[in-house]
Amino acid sequence: MLVLHNRARPAPAPSIATAAALAFGLVAATASPALADDPEAQGFGPDNVIVLIGDGMGYDQIDAASLYRDGTSYNQFGVDPDTGEVEREPSEASAVYEDFDVQLSAATYPEGGSYDPATAWSDFDYVNNGYTDSAASGTALATGVHTDNGLVGLDPDLLPVRNLTERAQETGRASGVVSDVPFSHATPAAFVAHNEDRSAYDQIAREMLTEHELDVVMGAGHPHRDEDGRPVDEAQYDYVDEDTYESASAGETGFTFVEEADDFADLAETSTPPERVFGLAQVAATLQYDRSGPDLDEDGEPIEGSEPYDAAFNEDVPSLAEMASGALNVLDHSSDEGLFLMVEGGAIDWAGHDNNINRLIEEQNEFDRAVEAVVDWVEAESSWQETLVVVTADHETGYLAGPGAGEDGGWTPLTGEAGELPEHSWHSGDHTNMLVPVYAQGPGASRMQHHAHYEDPVQGAYLEHTDIANTVFDFWGRG
Image: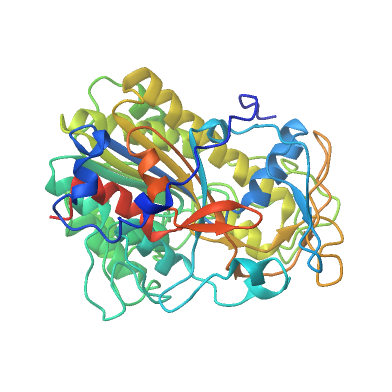
C-alpha cells in the first residue's frame, strides 16, 4: 500500500491584499510599477517552474485517496443549501502538497463562462453546467488565456497563443511535458501545440515531436501495445501517425527514443542523460487505468465491491513518478538557465467519467507519488529558493461527493477508514464547473495570492485558472 508523508495542517495562508490584487491583470512583457515594488519581481522569481495537473481532480478525489490510504481527510465538510451553514470535518494533511505555503482554489470555466459562488452552494446542480473541457482548461493553464472547448493552444479567434513551454525556450530554459495518458491528449498538447481540434492526435503528435524545441515528451499511446502492455498483431496508430512514430522511434526527430520501463527508471539516475528524450511507454492509452482485471466486468465496467489494486498493475511500464523524475534529470542537464515541466495525472479524469472509485484511488495515489518525486528533486537537486511547484487541476470530473449528497441532502462529507472504500456518491459522468484546488510553493507562489481576487463562501480565496500561467508570465515576461 502506498505510504505518503503525514503532516499537520499548515497555518492558514495570509489574507488576500485586495487592493494590491486588483493591480494585476493580464501581464505584459514589462513589469508593472506594482511588480517593480515587489522583492520577488526584482530578480527573485523562479528559475524553474513545475506544474502538476491532476486531470479531473477535485478536492474530493484527493480526499477519497487519502481516506483509503491513511484514514484522514483534509477538506471535507457538509453544506446545507437552504441555510448556507457549513460544518467542517477534522482536517489532517496526508498528501505532501497539502503542506505547501500557498493554498487557494481556481475557477475553471471556458471562454464566455462564469462561476457564481452563491449559486454554487445553494443549487446542487449548478456546477453540472457551463463546464470546461481539458483542451480549453489546459490552454488556460498553459497560456493564461481563456478559450473555447475543443481548442488547443488557440484563442477564441483561432489565433495561436504563446504557452509556457514556448516562453521557457525563449528565455533559454529547458522544457517538457509528461503524462500517464497519451502524450498527444488535450492537456500535454495544450502546453505545446496549436490546433482547432483536440482530437486531431496525429497532427498534434507531429507538431509536438517535429515543430517545437521541447527537450522532453513522455506519455502513453504506443501503437504496438494493448492496454495490458502486450504486443498487438496489428499496430493501432490512434495517438500518433505511422510516419511520425517511425521517425521518432528511429531517432530522426532529434529525440532519444525511450520505451523500456528500465530505461525510464535509468533516466532519473544517470549523470549523463540524453539532451532530448521522447519517452513512449509500452502500453496503449494509459499506464495503468485501462488494464484488465477482476474488478471489471466483461464490458469493462467496475464491479461493485471491488477494491483498489485488485487488478495486478502492468509491470513493464514506468510509473508517473519515475517519468517525472527522469524528465527532471534530463531537463536539469539540458540548460543552466532553468526549466519548465508539466506533469499530468490524466487518468484521474478517466476514473471520474466512469464513476470508478477503485481505480480513481489508484490514479490519485499515483499522482500524489509523482508530486512527492518532484518535491524530492527540488530538495535534493534544486531548492525552494529557485523552483516554483504548482499542483492543481484542469477541472473536476464525476461530481464526487459524500453519501446522501444531492438536491435534497445538500453537500455531505466523504467518510471512511484506512483500507476501506470511502462512503461516497457520484453526480455526473462528465466534467463540472466547481472550484478546484491550487497548491503552490517556491518563488512566485505568493504572487498567486495577489491574483486571487475572489472569495467563495466554502473554499475561500480563489483565482481564475488563467492566473496560474499569468503568475509565471509576471516573472518571465511574455516575449
